[in-house]
Length: 348
Ligand code: HEM
Ligand code: FES
Image (cartoon, rainbow, N blue to C red):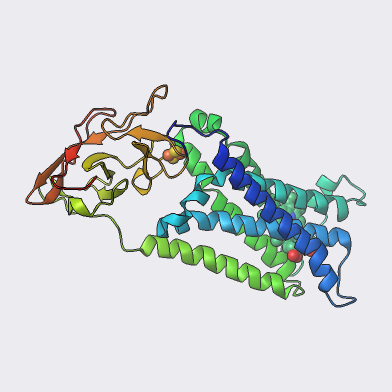
């Protein structure tokens, strides 16, 4: 993340993130394909082609599970935020791994079919009325189609083209893809009853995703939402850590991020102009409010991105009374300058 306000382009952090991701992918595949078979008792191994498709299929499932955990983890503990920062590359990698798995399946199970493998995939098994033998591949096809759409539209061009609202709604489809992958595994590998290890991993993965989402939604709210009179009591100003923010919920459902920087407070809309990231969960980097999601930056005093960028967010007015911080819930137009509120006696 740089104070030079880099939008979503390549930078050092992304290269390190991707390198670590690739290393983890390599370690998993090497362990699955070479170390595990060497340690397995004689006669328990499977054909190399099947081992390959299982290695890539299980890896895609684990990666997708991890992607879904990053959001709630970052909400529960800020130390996970760096993972959130580059989650889109993680998603594209997952799609590539799932594509390799699917192409191995097509090249093995359907290669000697009398019809085209793609036709065979949809027409060979039509046992829709029974659980055992159900055409579980179709769940995989649906999940893969969603992953491809999400990977293809992950670039900022599509974000601008579709608009943040529609783009975000489209990307919520990742949950449908996950449910489909779980069904793919349950109706395929698990109903065959031969893969206890995968059953344990899948149960643990689903419980972790569900548990983390519940924990993140039940977490005692860090928001201080009072808003009885015209001004909202935003709490003790001195307890906001320097360089960080307190998020205050407004009665109309919007949220405001009140940042402390160099002994003064500034309030801005909590929603980033890029993809609606929670600015109040970010921090100040070299004098600029920096979004935790992809590093978009805004000046504390007027909510504007530094030139040459043109994004603007709304600012709010703050007051101090009897040691309490008061917030005017009426937003100023995006980019309106507001003099930061000096904290008497505060260390900067
Ligand atoms: C066109 C799409 C897909 C097709 C045709 C397909 C097909 C298959 C087949 C035939 C198997 C059984 C392999 C065997 O053990 O003999 C399998 C297993 C599996 N697939 Fe897929 N799949 C697709 C997409 C996906 C996707 C998108 C994911 C995950 C993101 C996935 C994850 C898995 C997993 C975890 C297994 C079980 C591996 C194991 O037994 O250890 N598949 N798939
Ligand atoms: S930088 Fe992407 S949502 Fe804020």
